[in-house]
Image: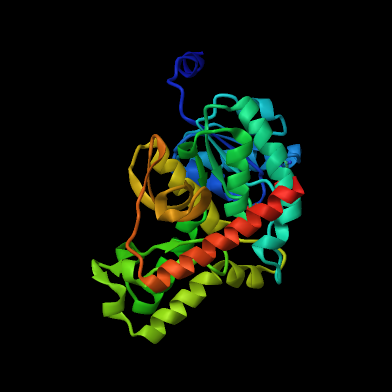
Length: 321
Ligand code: APR
């Protein structure tokens, strides 16, 4: 009885709804719960799977020590009052597929789900994960009508964390000391930036010869593929899930993190109205600032090519609507 009274009077915790309770959605829930960031609602067309994963995760709470509510549903109206909605619904890649191969099916799902998010959680921040993410986040932005600071594509921070991992491995250094950034499209045309990456404050080109850096850059560009080829029937989930939790934490705790995310750029980088991964400041206003890096002429050219690729994808996505 006393417990019930306490619970009845509790301060509301933040709420994160995750659409899609598959590999990425459930793993994002796992990291969010372990960081005790918010109550979590998993939403999936497969109601039992959403409920089952939510219950399974909830039952880890007493051991791990997190104290958040975790529920599953297929009822979108329950996302009401979410502070953040994460869109992971959609098909993942199989070996031999590019993210672009998911266009047709994921465009339809993104359209349908975004309409429901805009209807039931119009004041939320929206983190988009569904691939090809730079095109899907653009559609979600247009369809939702949300302000540009509230719609964030989770990709550049994931690519950066892969780059950081490979740098640490190569140098036998602590990942905690590795800072690295990847910008551009979430595709083979992404741009890992060694000149803006450092270990313990020492710039990467001072630590490794060009050949080694080039190999790390190439491995990063194919980071997702490397895992998918090993998993065969499953797709990546731990690192993308962690990328979602990283952005959610930055928003909810107003951390002013500088992360590479797919953000709506207009005058910035002369992009002229497109989502692309660039360094942004994330706090409780979502994307609070876009940081313009000084790029070399070669990097500028590659970045423009990357943006051109995203524009092409957006064009294809719009044809699927
Ligand atoms: N509404 C709600 N859930 C949906 C809908 C929908 N309209 N359509 C599909 N889903 C759910 C599926 O039922 C499934 O549980 O989305 C979930 C997707 O899970 P997985 O197939 O495991 O895919 P996952 O690996 O999580 O990847 C999801 O994120 O990283 C990207 O490329 C990846 O586009 C893919 C997405």
